[in-house]
Image 1 (cartoon, rainbow, N blue to C red):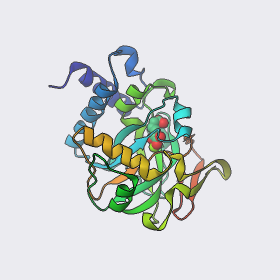
Image 2: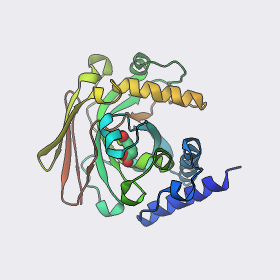
Image 3: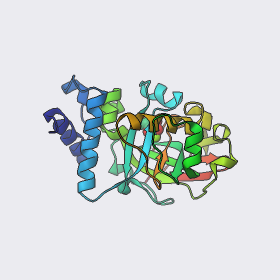
Length: 260
Ligand code: OOG
Ligand code: MG
C-alpha cells in the first residue's frame, strides 16, 4: 500500500503543477521524507500521469555537473522521468505563464538502440547501446517557493521536469569524443556560459552508466528507443517572455527556445 505521506506529497505536487503556484518544500512538513521515499513520491505522480494517458518516454539525469550542483546547492545526482507531453516541438515558443519559474539548460541527449541494464554498466557499454546523440534543451520548473529545495524535495518533484526539446542533428557517439564536445549558451545573443561534455561527471556516457547501475539496484533498466537527457552542462538560466535562449554545440548543431 502507498504510504499516506507519499500520497499527500504527490497530491501537493499535482496541485502545484495544475495551479502554477509554488508550494512550501515538502521536507518542511514531512521531515521524514528521505531520498528513498522521495523516489516513491515521484513514482506515484508518474503512475497517475500514465494512468491519465501520458506515458513515460524518456529518462533525465539531474545535478550531474558541478555548475548545476553549485547553482542548486545539492551535491548529488538526481533522476527523473519525462512523459510524452513534456516533449516540446523545436521552433515553437514556450508560454512562460504555463510555468512557475521556467529555466533553461543545455544537455546532451542519448537515443538508445538497445536495452541497457546494470549492474556493472560502463561508459563504453552506454555508447555501444546508443543509436545516436543529439543536443537538447531542458525547460525546468520547480514547484517549490523561491526555487529552493533539498535533494529529497527535488526528487519528489520529478527533478523539476517540465519540457524538453531535442535537436534535429543525430550524431553517432562512436564518431565523437563527447567529453570534448563544446557548447556555447546565449541569452538574446549574449554569451552567458560555455562548457564541454566533460562537465557531466567527466563524460556524459559515464553519467548515464552511473544512472543505469542505480536503476539496477532498484530492479529497473532503460529500454531500447528511450531518450536519456544526461544533465545540464551549465547553470540553468531563467526563461523570460520575449527572450531567446540558444545552445550551440560542436558537432550536434544548435537549438533555440523563445519565451512568450
Ligand atoms: C533540478 C533538476 C536538475 C539537471 O540537468 O541538472 C537537472 C533543478 O535544477 O531544478 O535537470
Ligand atoms: Mg536537466
